[in-house]
Image (cartoon, rainbow over all chains, first blue to last red; front, side):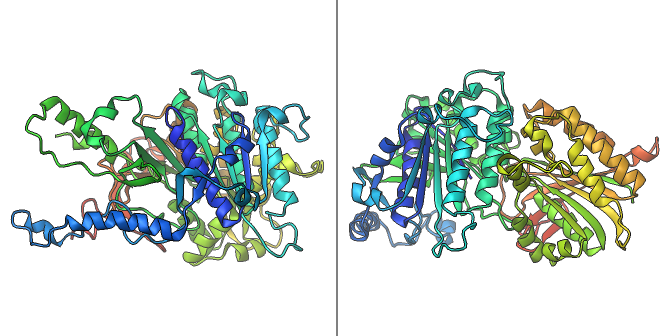
Length: 342
Length: 249
């Protein structure tokens, strides 16, 4: 269960959501799209087109070549201790093919979209039907969504209930902007919401459904609107992976020279620890994203060299402050702010 | 015998302790009732196999009673009408009752020794209690449930109880903090796994504080506190004194 905290204007999280669905189409998985905001048909029309192997490799190849020409092969004279450290790669170096790449400037062709089976749940259409299940004091929008998901899972045999089915497929569930006011939940608009448990109950039941079937789910939530932090803590506990997107649009970080190459930050609050005592932890927690003309990339954040003479004290402290905030990343490991002040 | 152990984690994931206690008690030959609210049976099974214990086999021979919370919840919501003689342990979810009596009854029935049983002491293991609050149980109901379990398992059956809770330093989840603080006061042993205060480190995953609450049994004794750091590996966890991780030496 991948839980994504939306950025302020929902632009980048929308993009991530569409990537997830597009990957499903290309892999031949079945899709289930739910939204209260946009009709799922429209969402599906706007999936990015997959990049064919040759064009992508060529693009990457161009970039890599440009970088290499600037390389110096001489040994370092002053910072010679650093010579032995591996050269830091901003993006995964060997371009290992895990998944596919997409071109954001083009839309996916309708034929490709139609090649997979997809189900949709548009809240306003579903509200007119009567619920059949016991709602357990849960918000009715959530209850209907759960009912719909459960029905698809058991009808299409994703939970292995149909031994006749020869080929087992994966169901990718995408739920957009959950917990927003459109779902009838006031968690996003008030500090003391009427029903504090609907969202967490929904997540628990969804988790149960995911665990007992071959499915994966991404949920985006406008977390910046949720005032009640207790709910966010509980939600984090109930999800396998929690990622937050912070875009720089409209914030003071847009003009901060530290971030001039990037469009936003990626905060990884929790990574899944399934079927094992340990989890897969990468070396760095500081990730940033940028949207180039065709590609959306997530890379390690590295500070540009501080070459300017006129950098003032204030901005230096600001940089240091944000650098500290960056390293206090993954909640599942550790957060430390106070002990490194010096 | 008759001990209440509280597992607590802050800023990190303390579930490795749950896996440890599960395989520890099963290997010791105790009858275990495991209320697993957060993960599926196969998750625990796979990890337990790495630690050398087979949960499926334990279940077959009646040594392990496993309540898979996620599955129970689905059965309650999407299943057919329940038979009157077998109420679901998670009945509080349907809103008909607000207390956790059904859950307690389930625990009591599982751990009461049956006639042919030859297991050493019963053990109740809960992972994790904070989920009950997320599902709508009131803090008082949760504390009542634990109290009843303690009386029944620790005092009457002379068994042990191990419970995992999450907590955060500046948490705004008051209900959770209330439950955690209350449980801390009544525990014989507290194992507190914390993420390092200085941030993430690849070689030291966290530190664990072991608090033996001697003051519970004898009025004038101070509690014994020991602190170690640990690193989690694929099949076990290594503990070492603070600052002496293998990466440094």
